[in-house]
Length: 126
Image (cartoon, rainbow, N blue to C red; front, top):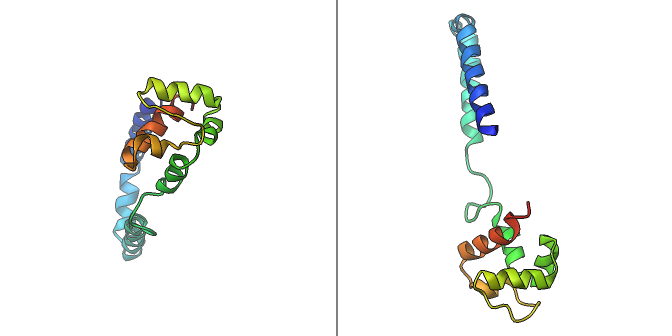
């Protein structure tokens, strides 16, 4: 549904542009119109500039916190009991031995493996 509505929105934008093309063409014939469009094009380009910490994406810190949280905390986040979480981990081929283990201890230090495990555990509940 969402994908189709996106296409409808693009179609409506194209029709809007076609219907208003003469007005836009007239607006761009003046220096003032060209300057305004130029200012907004520059603002758009600036909005794509990366800001802040370039070393990691914004979701890395919360993922790291979940990966380093004990399984009891992860079970609370997943809204299951620790026993249910341990059973799911065992089904995934992991061997949790205590509730104080973390998912990073189970899959290692690789953030991609941690992310996939957390996605598997939490993604089916969202």
